[in-house]
Image 1: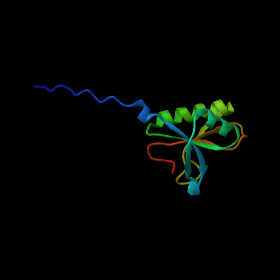
Image 2 (image 1 turned 45 degrees about the vertical axis):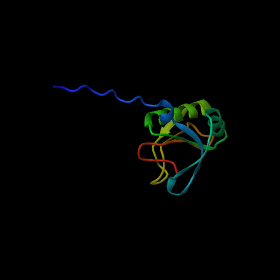
Image 3 (image 1 turned 60 degrees about the vertical axis):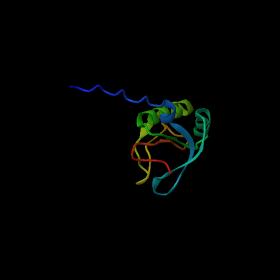
Length: 113
C-alpha cells in the first residue's frame, strides 16, 4: 500500500530573502560584512566607489540582487569570479571603471565574515 506524500513545508521568503550590508575588504580577499543597509543605500555606496555585499542562503537570489544594485548604481556592469584570494567572493563591478569598489555576493560555499 502506497503511503501518501507529505506536503513539503512552505518556505519562508522573508527568512531566505537576501540581506544587503556595507562591506570592507580584508586579508586573503575576504569580505567583511558591516551594518545592514537598504538597496537605495547600497546603490548610493556603489556610486561613491564603496563596497557592498549581498548575503543569504540562495545563490541565485544573491547574484540577481547584487547585479541589480550594481546596474542601478553604475549602468553597464560585468560579473566577475572570486579573484582576490582564497577567501574572496564573486562580484559585480562597473564596466568600464570608475567608480572603484564592488557589489559582492555570497555563494553556498563562500561567505562574508
